[in-house]
Length: 116
Image 1 (cartoon, rainbow, N blue to C red):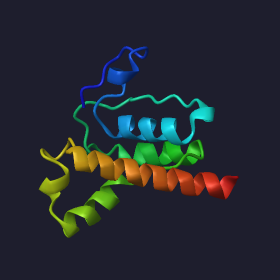
Image 2 (spheres, rainbow, N blue to C red):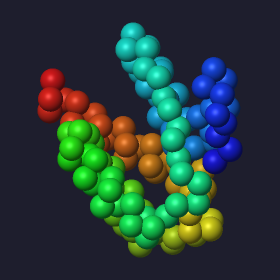
Image 3 (tube, helix red, strand yellow):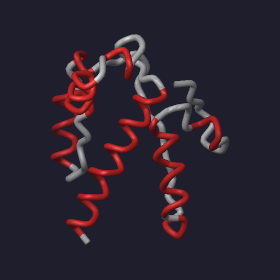
């Protein structure tokens, strides 16, 4: 989603995506934390490239929050249509990015409040 490799250029490094939206919200809501966002997207990969099992294992190994994007996109697609969220089956539309950002913040916040 148009993300760059120059980590010093924060406006372009994060891309036009849910990563940018999450970083923006956390920067406003938690400025004292001085959080850094990183976009490490893999070009053109879909859930069916069976990276899910690798991500699941990594989340377990590192006790990380695993955001199950396919599950909530499936639910959202039933409520409206898949084309409302993703234009080509891979890249979300702006509302798709917002959906991911909201879900990410909700799930990470729930884990954070449970741990602390």
